[in-house]
Length: 205
Image 1 (cartoon, rainbow, N blue to C red):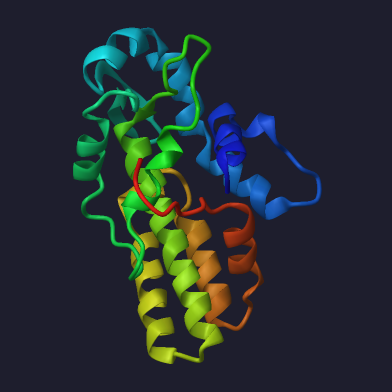
Image 2: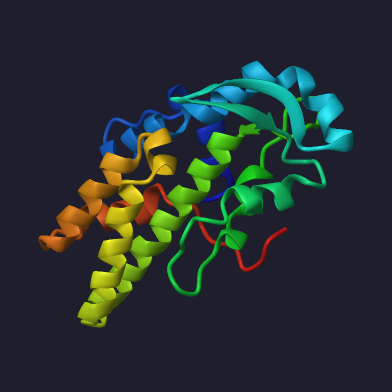
């Protein structure tokens, strides 16, 4: 998923509701409420936060969690985001460092970055990690590496039980993907990677 896909996420489910691509529509609808809400609730602190710190001092409900809204354009955003997501496990060869662009591709009309809550940061990175394990599973399947498939399957089931994925409603979706793949149906996971997963970039910004 490129910058356009992230922009669609930021605008909310009404921005893209295709009639024929149900998996993408469902996933975007589930994952977008967090970001769209940030523009409304935390926008007032953007101008101040941009020049000093990622901490806006605005707190609000993001799904089931009450968390602070963050300014991604601030110099301390990445260090703090790394702390928030240090517990998230990616597949070998991948890491959160390849996905910080997600938070830095969209700006408001006044030039400030669209804000994310602490919950949104953790959920987006957890979703990226899930995607990395999906890639690992499919790569292992193609190579008939059953041990690596089992490792990826276990990681995906663990991710589906995590609070971070539950907060953006993608836990049950992840369970569906891996259950289908384990039973021989690769279609849902392939569709997820093609249409709903962020593209890893080679380095952090």
